[in-house]
Length: 112
Image (cartoon, rainbow, N blue to C red; front, top):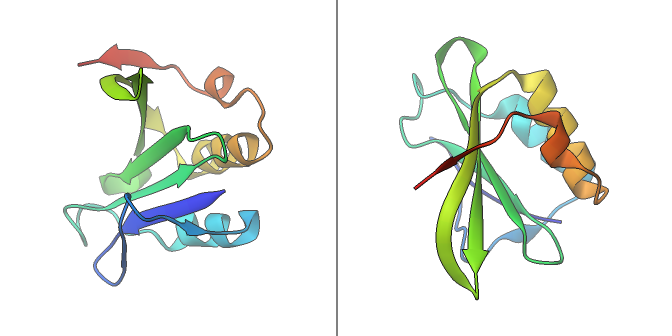
């Protein structure tokens, strides 16, 4: 699994994500700032198959997941759920890392 992120202290470009372990990914989630600290915060992960999930941490511990959907290699739309907490984010990332049914852990809706 590869990781990319943007915080007030670190930036890893989504076009050039870095390999990470599950433990390092979970630690990065724990340390990830809210929009109060870093307005343009995000953290994301890419599977070996090229699937991507990314998260934004809002105020008060609320999180959003955004999963871009590509058709023929081109962006089509995103699937989002903006009602997550840090425990659910970690559960999703663990499932994503293990090639599990991470989509079943959230209530994704289509956005354009």
